[in-house]
Structures are given as structure tokens and as C-alpha cells.
Length: 344
Image (cartoon, rainbow, N blue to C red; front, side):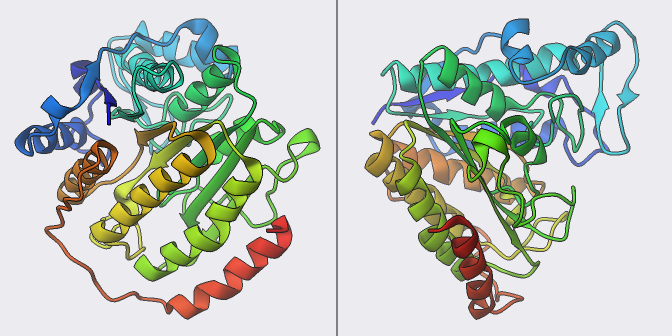
């Protein structure tokens, strides 16, 4: 297996040390990959910054201009109570989006079997015209749009299992039948979107699929949701490329959320995604870094994804499992409602 790996040292420059989304997150991942001997096994590719055209394919002129204006200051700006930007943040976020574009290029052009984009700032909350939720540019959406335009794909699937709903990704593709967006997220929780009834609109009706999960669910519940919802939805849609927005903030030790996943379950999810990609799109898959705020869970989790992409069976889990705070039996009613709404 050849696994493309895209990251950049500049990703540490966008930094607010007292903020949950700080440079130490990606430094922890880099250190863990290096210590595990994984970096040398990956095909490291240098990302190019996303162009204005690539950004404006999913974001408004006003959205981009806000970052341009901040880049011309000499101070940090709080765009909202959660989201900061620095003068360097435009360049850093363009590189993050460019890393996703490069990962898509590597997989679609056959230079790699699969790819790993370790980036920050994250992106899935960035809407067409608003930065929010720690996110400046929507990396996965920019990558998906690039796949559709540059590589002329007809169908791209985005699976988001960050603990927070990817509202920005949903908004960007809400009327687009070429993108199947599936999100498994804690609900009620920030940003308060992603209801069962949000299914897309116009030509895109049916290509948005949300599974809003009450806090406390863990390994068994996520496995059931994947097997009974994600798999049949993907098999019906038949994507030509799968993009996975991964947040390790659904892990049971994460300080910002209330889900109960273990690293073993995260590993199962990644390998299930790989198996599904082999089945529906000749293995073409890219994993992208979103959230995750316990550094140990985050770094070990990304090492496990790298191993899975490389074909290794090894698992690193310093935390182990914990009891689920909600009965896995309780998830079946939610699954049944999703299946009824979407006819799967």
C-alpha cells in the first residue's frame, strides 16, 4: 500500500496557546507518527496553498475577504467567541486546504492508494460565508469540489465522525446531488445543527444524512450506526471517492464532549471505511484531521489510522475502553428512524 501524507510545518503558526485548538495538537500527532516509525513509511508530499479560485468554489468573496483583511493587521482577531485568526492565518488555512487538495490529487491520479491529511486549522464548521467553531476554510469541502471539477468525478462521499456536526460541509453541499454528506455527531451539542430532518434540498434532497446521537454512546452504538446506516447508504450512492472528516473528540477522555468511544472503536471505524472504499470506489479514500482535544487520544488515534492505511494490524491504545453511558440498545430506535427517512 502507498499512503500519501500531506502536512506542513507552517500549521503551527496559527496558534493561540490558551485555546483548545492550539499548535500543540498537530505537534503531538507529528511526534507520535515519528516515534512510531510511521513517517518514513508514508509518501510525504508537500502541499501547495489553495488558490483563490479553489477557495471561492465553496466560499463567498466576503468569507475570503475577512481573512485577507485580518492578514493585513498586526494582531489576533476573535471572529466569534470560539474562533480566532492571526495575520498568518490566511496563509496557514490556504495550506491546510491545499493539503486536502493534494491528497485528493494523489489518490485520484493513482500516485497513492489512499491518503492522510494532517492539517490545522480544522474546517468542517466553516460555512459558505462564515468562519466559526475554530474553522477558517472548509478543507474537506474544498477537496470534494476539487475532485468533482479537476478530476471530473460524478459522486463524492463525505463521512464526518467528529463529535460536532459538520454544519459548514452540510451547508455547502445541501443542494448538490454529487456529494453524499453523512454525519454522526453528539446532539444536542454545538453548533446545534444536523437534525434527522435535514436531508438536503432541491436536486440534493436525500444526499444529506444526519445521525444526531445523545451523549453517552460508545463503541457498540457507533458500530451499529456504521453497519446499518453508513454502509447501505454508501452502497446505494456508489461514490467514486470517499473523504473522511475525523475528529477524535468523541473519545471518552476528550474534555469538550460527552461520547464514549475508545481508540479501539476508532480503529474499527477507520478499517471499516477502508473496507467500504475497497467495495465501492476501488479503495480511493482520504482521511482528514478535524477535532480532538486530548493530545494522547488524538496522537495515538492518528497513528492507528496511518497503520490501517499502510496495511498494518497494530493498534495503539493507552486508554482502553470504558463503560457506555447510554445503552447500545437505545441507539436502534434512532437507526430505525434514519433508515425510514432515507429508505435504506
